[in-house]
Amino acid sequence: MKNRFGKTAGLALACALCLLLTGGCAPSARPAASVQDESQVLLGFSQLGSESAWRIGNTKSVQEAAKRAGVQLMYENAEQKQEKQIKAIRSFIAYQVDVIAFSPIVEDGWDNVLREAKNAGIPVLTTDRRINTSDQSLFVGFVGSDFYEEGRKAGRFVLRKMADADHVNIAEISGTVDSTPMRQRGAGFRGVLEGDERFTIIASVSGDFLRSKGKECMRELLQQYGDIDVLFSHNDAMTLGAIEAIEEAGLVPGKDIVIVTVDGEQAAIDLLKQGRINCVVECTPLIGDIIMELAKKLAAGETIPRDTYSEERVFTEFDTDLDSLAAREY
Ligand code: GZL
Image (cartoon, rainbow, N blue to C red; front, side):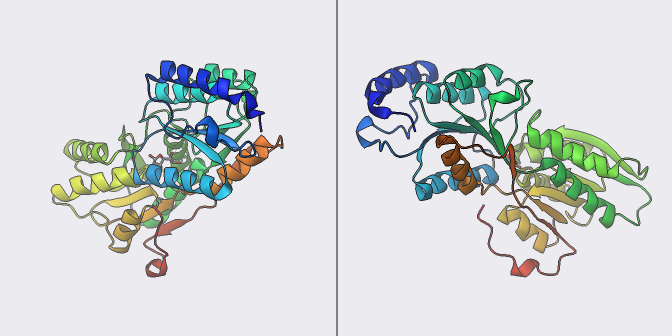
């Protein structure tokens, strides 16, 4: 951990910088100098927003894990804006945190601010989503899901469910454009189906991981295409919106249109049990404890694995134990 005796001056400077950089909203969790415990790791965490139950569950996991781990957390919510994440990272640098962790809303555009963190000697951990950079030294590791595998799991379910179909029209409602889950879930899904002429992805539109946009997208898809056999939706929030549109159109979700979704929110599992969703690919947001474990290692100068992946399941209509599933934490 950095020597924080010089912190008081640093704190004043950082507050001024943060007020300058963030338009006056200093990190709500910024500890006053008097309450800083020099032995505690100080982690700056930039969360991308609050767009879904998954994201809210992820934030809760990080905040509760910090308390359990005795890590002092400076938390910033960027409200879906990359420029706010960049400003938050700059304020963490000014405050000389021990470690920076962030969930990059999109993959591109991080090199400059991460070079500033590197020059300040602050290790950066990417969580949940990845960045696209030619300089791999700008971050020390990634912790989160294998989104390619999530897409492959969705594709393998479609292959099984539609095994007897002669031709299958698939509509895709994807996540935030140029985000890692959007790019990799889509690629994994397509990789499983490619080469099988029976499957056609007739449309792919972005719902930005939002329930409201998922509903809008599905309404438009149903107006444009009268023969959608399968919906592949990149997250449960959009799926919940899409199901509203499907039912408004007088169709039965899970029957008239096979529905494959990703995340594993309680609401999606409940609909799976009711037969209104056919497959839920788990993507766990509960990575707070592993983030704290890795942050403490980094603060102690230890090395960490380049990639740390979550263990994840897939739940389908073919499962016989759905009723025994434990309550979901998101
Ligand atoms: C995936 C995460 C995605 C979730 C969405 O790790 O980045 O963002 O699938 C969330 O629910 O909005």
